[in-house]
Image 1: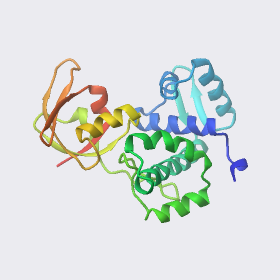
Image 2: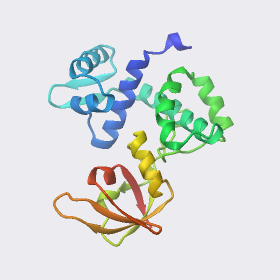
Image 3: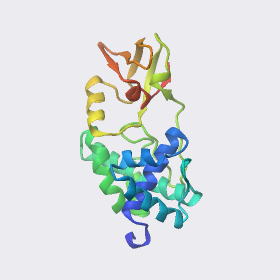
Length: 221
C-alpha cells in the first residue's frame, strides 16, 4: 500500500540518480539539479536525507551513488514507470512524446501487485515505447547491446534500440524525423570539433547535435 512506500519525491530522486549512474557511472549533484529542475539547495537537502535513509552514498566533489537498497527501490519505480508508459501508449493511444511525463504521475500510485497485473495484461512487454528495458518482477534488467549514435563511424548503418533522453519536446522532434526504436539510420557526415552529426533516415537527411546523438542508442547492422 502507498503508506508503506517512501515518498514520491524520494522515488523521483532515486529514478533520476539511477538513470544518471547508468549513463555517466555516477550522478553529479549538478546533473541531478538539471534533470529535476530544482534549486541546488533543495537537492542538497534531499540528498542529505536520503543518505540518512541508507539510499545513497554521497561524497563531496565525487557525486552520488545508490546503495543496494536505493538501487532496488529505483528499479521498482522504473518498472512501474515503464509499464505505465506502455499502458498509456498501447491501450490509451497517448502519443509517445507525452507518455513519459504522464507516467511520472502514475508510477507513484501503482503497487507491486497492480504492476504485476498490468504486466500480464500488456502481455509482458520487454521495453517501454522509447525502447528502454522494463525490469522484471524480480528486478532483472535485460539490456540489448547498444552504443551511442555519436560513436558510430561515417557510412555505417545502424538500428535504433532506444532513446534515453525522454524530454517531450525532444521525443516529438525525433518522432517527426522517424527516429524511433527499430528505425535504420546511416551516418553521412561528422563535423569536427564537436560539431553536428548528419544522418539519413529513409529519405530524410538531418543534422543532430552531439548531445542528442549521444542519447540515441543503436546497434550495428
